[in-house]
Length: 618
Image (cartoon, rainbow, N blue to C red):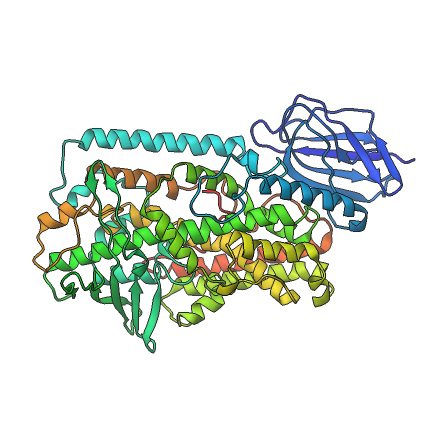
């Protein structure tokens, strides 16, 4: 028997350490040896012990273990890494396979037991593994055993709850100061505007009435983007110049009643023209769809009286606010990431290379979704999500396909399209590098029951049977697998970032994106300032929008940029070479975007890798 050096690394977050004792064992092909010494893991420390050890034993209170390293006997002993990055509780024993995946056959029974445990823990709850868009989730501890880093670490929880409390306090102060006042002019919104929070928000305040600025938000709206073009569905009508923004998803949706006052929604249709200089200008706005039971709605034009044209644009921006938050942010961002996360936990063992490449991009997703749902009520938003879910296609989640379908490739002023394609290519090249290390050929993919089950779980269960919308139920080649995994990572990183980040920039000036409308759409073009002020949000609603915008749009102190995660799920030089190349490619793109933005009046930063978060965390 040789002498082994064992390093036990504990996480650095609050309460990651434990005063309880931890027992370690070394488990090998020919048996196992228990380490006589016990240790009490310290937060942010690496405890070194000598003996025969590898796997984790039991304890009474939680302990967050990053990883364990074991160096073999002798001065030249090979060091093996056992990634953990999860909470370890006092019930049972947690087995950690070695990180390279070598000896996977030896862990076959462990993999089967792990998947059986994960599957039963979610199936017992009935519906939570599905992309419901409808029901409240049960507590996260009831969904999964504490094997994964799904719950907020204490640092994240404290920051999240303290910032929310601050936002509510500021809201109360604003309401108190303005509760007796009413808006008389659009400039009155300056009473609740927070200067210094965002330079772009101040630009929005000063430019929001301009038609070119209105069109820019469709072409490069950052937080208002869809999978291809922020913020709405834009289609070519004539080669290279004419577009429409269609909000028909909102048709027939009843507005909520807030404090006994009916609120209103509309489903506008907007025609826009792309000028040779790259500006996208609105040409016509029809706020309501025609109906046999009502007079033909007016079509508003830039040549109309200024207040009529301004109110028509405000209705469009309000409708866009609704679809951005529900369809593009919640459904295509958070809930799609949830479907991927649940399927990954249920179908892929921690030893699987696809689990290893995905898990850093699923950090905190379940926890933030649960917190979002607990603050969500009923109403028309449920119907919108149901309708939007039926239009969620595989192609629309993959930038090369989606941009081509919308004929937005090659539009110089569409910075989203350029950045999304570049980021997609970098992510896909990273995925291909990892997949080619672990799959010898297409046959190896076809014969992998775990990856096939994962694909089927997402399409048939998570997405409620999305085969008719182009989602695969199986993989037949390495290319199929790489494309799908790239879609998963892009959805959880770049796409969510593009619709999330700019909320403070574009929503802080409330008239630019009214969260609600208090009067029905105008039936004619005789619009006065008093009609505009009676329609846009009142003092309380505007203050609430401003406070929530700050909470969602502020920089997160524990933000992890894309590809910069510290967790070492892969062991060995080859996967690390692929990851390092990924990081180098991201750095090159980051520099390109910085140089481009320096030349732009309105910089587009939402897909800049240093600003893209590695997972859906807020």
